Length: 297
Image (cartoon, rainbow, N blue to C red; front, side, top):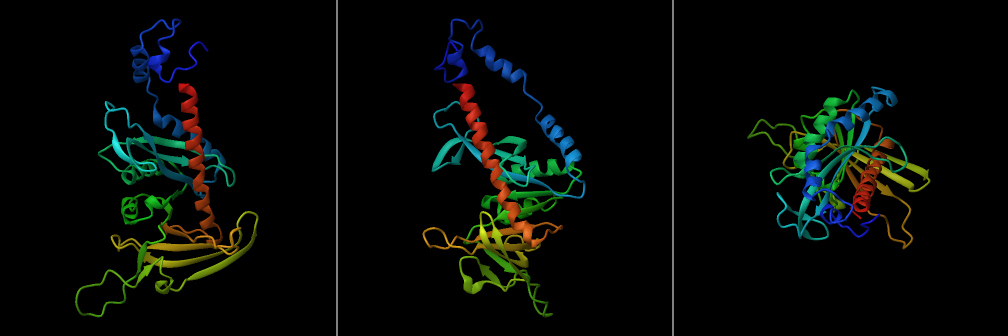
């Protein structure tokens, strides 16, 4: 109330009513670091009470950037992309999406990505920890940054199912043909380019759904047993969701390409819609950064 324009703790300590030195605030923060796993254990207890043990729990994984271009003495700054390449710190978040509708996201783990790690390695470590603590099967939904062979290989040993968006110019390969008894075994079959409809393989399953209150008519197709070039031993299912009604401008909506990796399966009528729940973690990012800004001011 007496220092309304303070932009950091050091400026706040300049108030005449503040009786300590500014460094004592940072020392208190360093001495009182909370146990980051305690909150996840609390959420897990609620999960066990609310969700049957046989039902998937939905978690969203994403990363965000805290730009610190002027903090030249800050340790372990990395090059991050936020409307351009900047200096700052990246953070990886895995959040529980508890509701079928709405924008709630409860962060289970929110950790900084050090310069010795990467977003994919950090996310895989977080997902593994959540799966070890959960009695329910876990379904992780991820943006297109994770829709590649690197993520498929990183999560191969984790007991979780993953639904990832893939880039519209990605390529996948079908299973190789039967061995012809000559030469070495082939790893790759037919190459499918997502931005070239002439190369698309025939869908194994196609369904159409009418009357969605927000999306209208939707056509969903699925192609089974495909793989990325660098992960030929890890088959995935390719899912395409198309909104049949055009935009207000008359142009068609862009296609939504998804990849399912995991041993369990869900009905095609619902699996593609699970990905839309991923945006709950974006709302949590906005809430978290707004809270930090208000605390500083």
